[in-house]
Length: 196
Image (cartoon, rainbow, N blue to C red; front, side):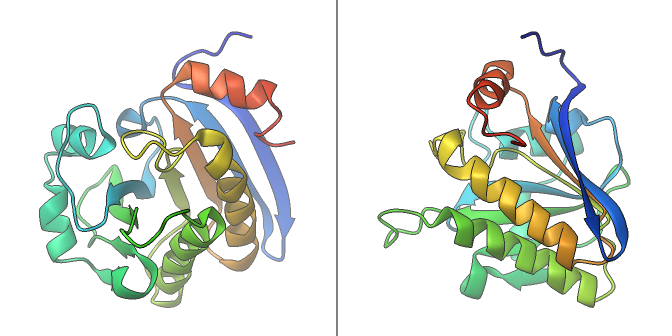
């Protein structure tokens, strides 16, 4: 199987009370995504937004000239105490906001992936209720970089959470799952974990 960079790899359309919506899997650099986004999601270790080399935080800071630590100090919505998530104010034209999921609390021996993803979509629900535009979001396969979460452990939660989010959040229309690693995408599709 050959996967081209910056290409849609797979898509899943669902019918909701507000019409058809979709989840799309892309092989692309999330910071150079070819579509405008209302929100780009990244993960961080709890209370640590350091731009470690070869991480999404470093890429965001280099691409958008934005300091993620500064964003964390003045979020538009801060649910970190309750749900380990926050979102920035409207700061960019191509990507309007950046949302962060804080992972790896010291007391979490085995992370609860469905809860992590549910918390992220709780943030999007709050944004929707406050009238903040959230029609399109892009997220990587959360936590599979420096945080070393195995993709096969989190991908089912990402897919299920995305479906529930699209069904429950009226203005959310597209969820883009964007992965730069071609090998990771091919392995997950072959193993039947993406859009069965």
